[in-house]
Length: 306
Figure 1 (cartoon, helix red, strand yellow):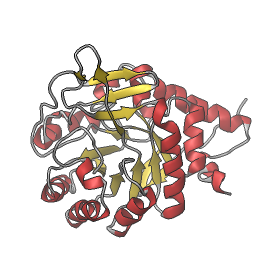
Figure 2 (spheres, helix red, strand yellow):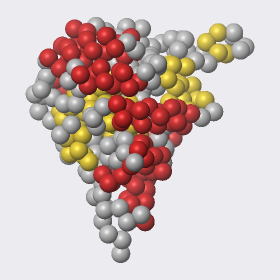
Figure 3 (spheres, helix red, strand yellow):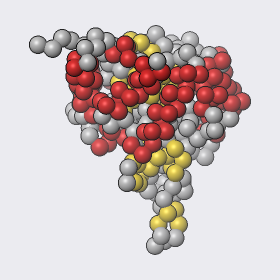
Figure 4 (tube, rainbow, N blue to C red):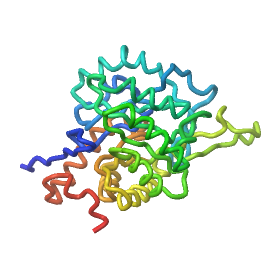
């Protein structure tokens, strides 16, 4: 009989029972997938992005399938922070899985306000500070493409919370290592990367962009080599734990990110393709470790650098 493998990891002081979380925006608030997958195979649930006020999101078509991925322009549709706390968080707290809340703001001040509002709310394990969403006209990626604006957003959040801060970085930059160093200096406890790549599709019959917002974020297998490269670069640049994401569909994909330096990985587009990707990836990680005589997944974090 194969021995049990220890898949647990620690991110910013949070104990993950497996190295798998969900990419914000792809898993709702967890209950949407509760009948489709075993949530206890997750190390944490990262909820969809939350803003101070409710948002309806972008108008018109929001999703486009591409040959090797998905372009989305949802626009941070969410019920707002107060509705999240009263309507969604109570259910999440019953699931015995750490809850990571993805926060967004139109201004630096709003990042501080969100951090203050969620500080010490019972059951929230960490905040994921989203400075990289390409699907909104205000905030989001506007903060994540320049070191000075990224620093300001992280600084505002750090001043207003004692919760661990996981900073979600944008790949739409020229130097991802510099961005990682910048947020590390401002008090980040961990880094998640990458968010989606800016992309678009044109309807050649109508002769105009398909998305009402013109641009969206490309995710899925098409971006996996880019994401893997950036995880590798950031691992060498900073000493913070990394949550790697970007086109991870299988256990083999997850293993490559862990070997590149990710302490944990997030599944995003995979959840749309196969709703039980969490279970399949978790089982695949354990099977691989058993075959390779690996006692704990932590043994291989960053091993591709050696």
